[in-house]
Image (tube, rainbow, N blue to C red; front, side, top):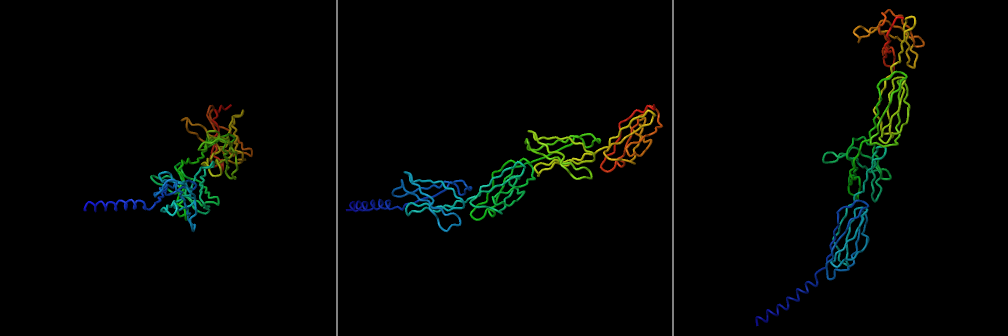
Length: 382
């Protein structure tokens, strides 16, 4: 009798467990390949359906973008034999997704969206930042940042234009840079974002003169270099003579090494500077001018001198000097004022075969000129 009762209970319990498995509720999972997406890029939604029949089930995907009042049907896929499914989505703003198989609904998954930011160094050395999103970011701020130790340092901020573009006039050294937008500037529905880092090579413009002083009527050469090196770039050479306005001396073109050169004949103290792209200037290079003094011995034993400076120097004093026996010291033995032709003549009272010269001090040369001396002359007292 006891054995019969055990068998009867077993018969009752076994069908009950089978029935429990038969009515187990269906489930639908939902996950994503990433919790955030870059604007214009896709993420993958995946899930698994469990239930009485898992293969070839229709899964509908609903999307609710930020700021909308209700979700909309995004699309539909079918499960494979294992009940799994996937779909690629491209949210334009923060979006919440849900999946459905009939009345079975998954939990919600929210994907944050960051604006896509790009940075480019322009030919004129400026840095352009561009922001792409599902809306225009006009008036929002973006930041130019440089790599600083283990982090990033903001060096400049600019507002975005109506085209979501900002241009920085960079005055930073060679470094690694990026542009960034904070979550507050990105606005509702968007995450903060930054561009990929790029190597920035500071635009430099250098120019030197072949000499810092020159005799009146002689030439100097100005040579320069644009970095990074680019051929075919136009560089303006600006001259500012003493007491006069600046003017463009020449517009030169760089060669494939980024170098350029030009000759100049300053007639008075002149400052030269190179200008490139309207944003870069070289260091100013002043070139002093010495009056050109010539001296010759006349047939009557006198010594005549002439001073050429591009200006009338009437009344300006010149000095006749004799080289002392030590061979290094010059002694002034006479002074005379120049005529209207910037010339004068000395009557010498020195021994034959003396070395003489004519000098003009910086004070007598006048504003805009350096002091000067003639070449040495072996006086023969003919």
